[in-house]
Length: 488
Length: 100
Image (tube, rainbow over all chains, first blue to last red; front, side, top):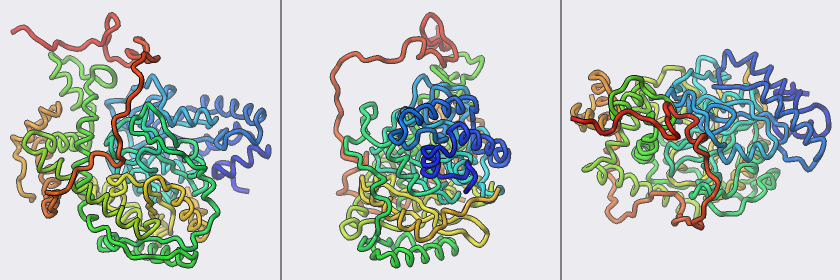
């Protein structure tokens, strides 16, 4: 049998119910693992071992009392991205401006995990305020890719993806505004899903781009993804954009075949700029889906080439407004010795924010400012309509769409830090789903000759996460890539 | 070099609107970055969007209302628990209006 920290959520849930080990033993094994590998990976911002063990002991009592009827996550050690509000940990968004911020309430998803009896290990590193694709924009420290410590784990949920890939948590939550769950999942060789906009309440998720942000699971396999999605989905009246739609039993979509499923291959995603190894992994993935009985259909998403430009106007406009609240008045960092309030705001924000956050606030402020709103922001909102329509047309012909998750495997630390635009283009395949609102999942597809994971992305119409799980699970069983662990 | 879409003077104004104190070298750097990004987004002008409605949200959502009744909310102490400075149950900040 695998070591305890190497278990998936569903394996651990079975073991706990069979009495093979307790949640306390499992949690201790994961905490030991954290102690061994964390100095090299640095996936976490905060870990609280005592609190985690106390939660584990409570979960053990509940497992004894409730047995089989205990929730699937009872006693399972999990990690949370540090932009999810928690009352028992500071919530920093990896920003100096929130370094000591302790939220007076829990995010909706955190309440859900607590209610399910999950063990919360700690908070994971990220690009500051989720702005970035490499976790190098963290205002606290960088995180390494467990497959190659000289490389980035992706971002912005790089800490969550690295923690799961390094077996420092059995699963984690991230957030995805333009690919921030799926891209790091691909680069770390794990499964990551961005649910449909509105599927999961954003209450207590620190806002970046409010019309784009969505919370989702990062896990070792597709079954675990379904388990976590089950736990966090559903309407919550505290988020007025949370959708009042029924939540299916996501695990019921597992172990089904994909015979007859029509999977679209958008030609624009295979045009240029793709790494040769990613291209080969995609060829193999297509063959795998065909051998499973799926029908591959050529489709076109004609406005794909405009997605990155559209995204950086919409997301920065929303960010400039959302981040106006960090002014040193009510919480967070405040500059010392200022003479008037404008001076306090401007110096607090100068000291508290990193360069990427400043760059995006300024870009967003510019595109919303008088005289430029129509040319930039309104224009982007109109192109967003066209991008959304592209998907609606494609889904008239196909059930799901297959693309790479990222144009390259994990790049080296520092490689793109001097060139913001180049960094933005690493999200080229993931950004459109956020603009359209549709769900997308990244699944391990291959390991490159350099030993780096490569992910594939599946996308589906709104609220069809079940279809994604069905296709992803069928592929996972066929490809068996997910079973390979990073060697640390 | 990217074409100049925004001048350094304009970037200084944007920094003021954004409430971000910036040094001269920072203004120069951000001006360069913003011009590179704005140069890239120029490509949106290729698309005719005259007859297209804007999308502000991916889901078609209308206003969500609830009954106008008082519900439990943060206590004064909870609301002030992270305050950099507080006095008499209020947030305390430097002067807003100054005598001239």
